[in-house]
Image (cartoon, rainbow, N blue to C red; front, top):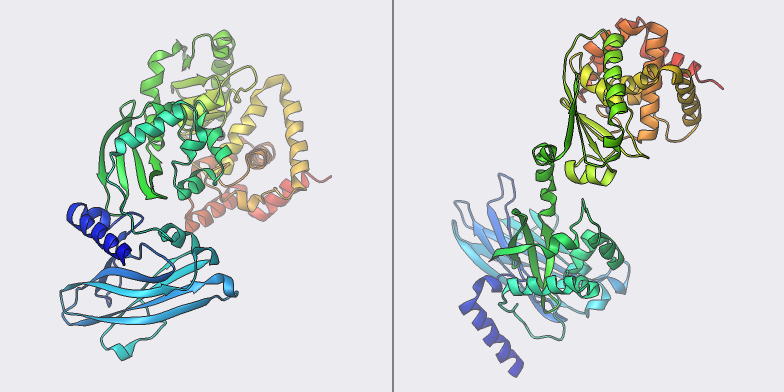
Length: 520
Ligand SMILES: [Zn+2]
């Protein structure tokens, strides 16, 4: 009895002083359950079953009647215990409340949990709008909400009295966590995350967290350096009971969501490092002024001081200018298009700074490439992309196929060897499960896109090789000009028609010819 009094007093305090926390914690689901249906006029809000315990529990919510007539709001509550049998053993009943037109009603109903938490408790709520209570049909709910075992565990306060989250200074709390990290108490930091954050971000594995936290340049994860340099700004209590702390890192806004869980305010989400995307949008303005630059007839080359690119810049200039001229000659292009080529010293830096993964990429008239002793993008590939932009934008097999095939054509004395290497690769790949039928590859708007690069690039190159070497450049250029890169089916069908007209052969026959080249 004394407990009950204490609990009521606490509750009273909360109502008087921090009402938003009463509606909250892991306490309340503050979503508006607006059902997009012309015939449903009931709006449900603030569904709350916290705290859950063995024995009697309370469902609280509010329902508003937006119709011109009185309506009956019904809720069917089903609490189940899974471990008793595969179908579970449960308790279920339906409750009715009449709500006058235009009115909101606070609704409370009790339901039991017959078991302790360990037994796999679940809860299901189904909501109904009725005009008469005898209209009730179990199947015809307009909204349902279920709590699985884990969600119920979050709400369970077994053996504890009803404790409201204390009104803490979340900035202090954040600084405490920063200190734990600064002193490398990784387990303690880990324990400052909610279970759902641990699972969502690190598959629930502290080793995953430790691995990510010390990476210099984390792309999908934040790292220790960023976290330690976050500067708290202001915080807000959210309708769902969490606290949102706004921070800045290098004047970029970050957000950390705290949730009260296991008697502690814990980090439930970290947001902001994803604004790397913002950084990525500005990389040319940020990086280029600090880099070394060499300008030639058609190129502006950018590279870091003391990088491998700087050491070999003479060769680079020669190869690229030579390639430029050869590409124009080969494709009969008359252009003076300038190209900016930016060299990054490694894959990680390039991905971190620009958001692009892989050895090389071309955007408009800018090329970014990794360039070091071990990794170098093909010297002509991206140039081909930029120079052929003005010809057309056909399906990816033609774009990537041409860029890859040009590498072979333009490589001079090695070209026979490279061509043979490609043929060998195709023969190998044809017999693997990874092989993509040409008929499918020709529909791709992007390569690699959904495919594996080690398969789709050589396949595209080999198909373009067949078209050019068997039917000549002119027909291929015509194809390049007239086919359109699109995932719209009608355009795709049109593409095939155009291709078949240009080559005066069905696609099936062309594919047959392709395969004949690679019979063993
Ligand atoms: Zn490419």
